[in-house]
Amino acid sequence: MSEADKLQKVREQIDTLDGELLALFNRRAELAAEVARIKREAGEKEDFYRPEREAAILRRVRERNPGPLAGEQVAVLFREVMSACLALQQPVKVAYLGPEGTYTNAAAVKHFGHGMLFESLPAIDTVFREVESGNVQYGVVPVENSTEGVVTHTLDRFMSSPLQIIGEVELPIHHNLCTLAEQMDDIRTVYSHQQALGQCRGWLDLHLPRAERVAVSSTAEAARLAAENPQAAAIASEVAADKYALSILHARVQDGAINTTRFLVLGQQSPPPTGNDKTSLVVSRVNKSGGLATLLAPLARYGLDMSRIESRPSRQGQWEYVFFIDILGHAEDTGLKRALGEMERVSSLFKVLGSYPRAAH
Image (cartoon, rainbow, N blue to C red):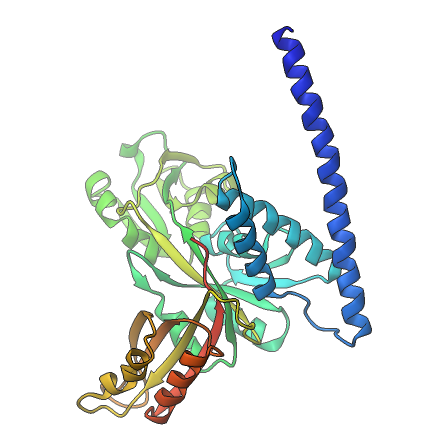
């Protein structure tokens, strides 16, 4: 059998499989529509998105995946199938810190898939307000970066918001030097978000020490500005570079080999336990010796893992602080539920911000 005949035979098998996949995709969509019909008949008319259900499906397909596709690739495929099916059940609106082409935009798509109705908003506060008002069902905002630390405005906004965290996304960040300039010597100004400039500080000190660094509202806005000035560059994503027709003069200019940003998904109500969850809360205690140790003692007693703690000024009094804490587990888990009850009793401020499925790694 010739090489051409062998290739033709394999391609015919692929064509057959593609037909089977198409039928299965549509069968799954029919079943999703049936789920929506049953829910509506039972009186459910609100949001049909179930983050705990989707997290369980994605975890299961990763665990059962025999390869050769990587687990993350399989998860992306299933995420898009679920997103398309949910769009058939009910349109879902998701707001994110924009404009289009930001890393928050990429995080929103990673979490929800392309089937949602995405709305770009100019500020973190605006994202919170749109979800609080019900104009959109969900919001996506950045909360911390592995190099530059927390996004303080996101944490502070939780102090006054009734919203709950319903999910998290971890996104590897690869910054690029995007420009119309043909060579480095032509670049006089570098635009980017303040966090991105900080994440590339060492590279910029070495390669563009004389260029002015200008912080703007987002990496996508930086790309837009760079597209208007042949002597400017932007630290931005590939998506932003493509959107504004910029060349990537240097790729992956972030200082650390590992540069990851964590994003939070905002909603009205936290999902039920999945068995692989995280709980976020904000607590405070009257400022006196041993106050923080007293707050955290229940976690040690119940053998619970605290994955993050961050202090912020309380704005209630001079040198008084609140603590944002992430704990592994769900607020409905027996041990964590008891620990939270004990923490609340010794706190001057206690607020659970949400229990939600942990980001997949």
